[in-house]
Amino acid sequence: MTSVAHAKPQGGGGGHDAHAPMSFWRKYIFSTDHKIIGIQFLFVSLFFLLVGGLLAMQIRWQLGFPGKPLPGGGILPETMVSGGVILPEYYVQLVSMHGTFMVFFAIMPLLVGVYANFLIPLKIGAHDMAFPRINMASFWLALLAGLIMTASFFVPNGPIRSGWTNYAPLAARPDLSGVTVGQMLWCISIVVLGLSSVLGSLNYITTVINHRAPGMTWFRMPLSVWALFITAILGVLALPVLQGAAIMLLFDNVLGTHFFDPVAGGQALLWQHLFWFFGHPEVYILILPAMGMVSDIIANGSRKPIFGYHSMVFAIIGIAFLGWIVWGHHMFMSGMNPTLGSTFMVSTLLIAVPSAIKVFNWLGTIWRGNIRFHVPMLNALGFVSMFTIGGLSGIFMAATPVDIPLHDTQFIVAHIHYVLFGGSLFALFAAITYWYPKMFGRMMSERIGKVHFWLTFIFYNMTFFPMHIIGMGGQMRRIYDPTIYTFLKPQQPLNVFISYSAFALFAVQILFAFNFLWSLKFGKKAPQNPWDDNGMEWSLPNPAPHGNWERTPNVYRGPYEFSAPEAGDKDFLPQYLKLPSDRDPVPAPLPAGH
Image (cartoon, rainbow, N blue to C red; front, side):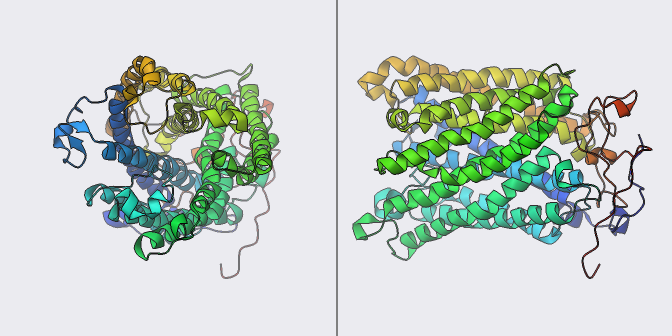
């Protein structure tokens, strides 16, 4: 199967032969190459994922062993620990910042920042993003936002104490929360991060619309590109809402306005409406890219075309549309009019339909496939199973009468982690392993990868499934010491079990970190198409050169032509391979000035 790196020009050049040699700083630090920017996002986001994980370990220590000194807690200042024991104020800050880092600085940039940047141009046959310099700016703004948020640990009174949702009026009244500078830094960081996300999203949308290679029609795009494209639209529309709310909250803290202070005539519920109007589309910003990449990997691992490709595309679009009309289900306990609550309940139940379509189609793809259980496939199957459990628990809470007793319990913690940790991170492990050869030119260890998957899968379920049980038993979220409540004391052995499981789950990730870093230098050199995949990216060397293709490639078919009769003795048929029966596509006319 021939490479297209030297294909005949089709309406535009700009390949890697057009780029002059660059210094180390220009090539790897202040880079405008979409692949390097994706890798920069990867390393920075993995660092923030580690930060969020370390915060989670402190939370689990406090819940499992309240009153006992934290190992290594002596190095923390007296504002955080007393005699090595975590203080209540610091515990609330741990909970608040764990959620903040995981949602905004780990999962979102890992799935969107990394793979939208790295994959979109490669998969649609483009030489780079539409706006490379804006792309570079979006990365540096995201890094700046993360550093600002991290700085809040080192200011007087530390970071926010109002949960990762930063609810008013506590967040709007420094005299109540006891936090001033940390609260301001949270708001500023979110505004800067929102700017980064909007700039990136505009870039992704423009690139997909205007820079597809000849023959790459809308319904020849891989589902990963479809998911990232729809996610970018959600980002452009949702992030400004949160930015506006954060600016109003900043004004309440700094300028003495009263947008969210009910004592002075403001509306505390206004913050909840603004936050969750952003927050529910944000849930799908975090999960849609995972769904798209898992679809690509499952089709490859099953050696079959994706089952119901068109229905999968329309399910992604349906999820994105319905995501805007369900935010009120986060506010069933906020004194909502029952009629309005019923409409949110129905729309929330309705959004389960396109998600169920996707699960059904994944199962249909796997059914009777010639399955290859490589590490990406194992993690993709882990994603499907964990996302299904999280989705089913979400249906419980969509019903208002059920949500009322479960609201703000550990049942909710289990639900969000099954979707966003079990879902997104299993998809992330699959994606990193799958496209690692394209990023770094080497293969990660298959043996270590399989051990890591099985241990993660086991300890993950041991950590989060029991939370459903203690949540049903009434254990609240953000509780400091469950042992002081008589009715919760019988559950404490489960809390200890969950904490030990969480520590084991965290420790297992050392295997992944070792595999990732060791393979950078000592991993087996990757062949050009190690997974026998059909995607455009596998027509390039590993790692792909700056500018990708020397000449714009042609696309002759869809992305999932596995086991096609025309493939001859192979069981895959790449999008870029021209058969005698294929005609060259007519290139789109160039924009004025090219």
